[in-house]
Length: 255
Image (cartoon, rainbow, N blue to C red; front, side, top):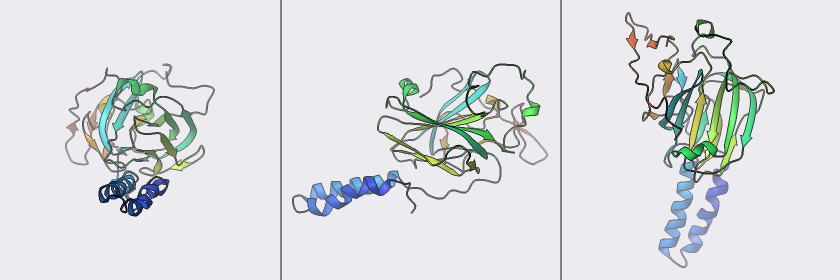
């Protein structure tokens, strides 16, 4: 089993304490052993195989945020304590900027999590799994509220958000790095939420998952590469299947 960086640093104190605690109490020794084993479980990092096509989930967990923000779509995945906490790139991209924002450590499912500590990984996407920007029919003159004229250009963003028990965010990438779809880009120690801010050409109807759906990082497809801007998915058969998605949480605050 692979483990994310830092796993042994957190687990070794409890594992070393277990045999010594046995001199005083079998119960305390078992608790220390369980804490050490549980810590390693938090940091487990299994290999994942992305499907042939499609934008993949950045994290294990449950979709807790799915809404429009101006002309962008935000998808948030909440990780519980039993989920793998390694974050993966949803699409092929080049990292243009990395920003750490200090903040609180509120539960990631609460509205106050908007003020939590976070790391923004800003990217220029290079993915054939995203809709073609040239097909987008809204005005290119519309101002993007997420644009940052004084910073390196980016059209997508993956945000690692700390939670109530998460005190450390560990990005693995830096500006200038190229990412493959499903490649590891960081981990959050002990939790909690990962957001994807999609490029402007992605519409809410293009997303193939809904709030409450269970995600597997690097494997669950959240946007089909054959998704048209009209919200249909081309499955490679003779018929098209409408997305049939409900707009759940379009006006809801982040979890």
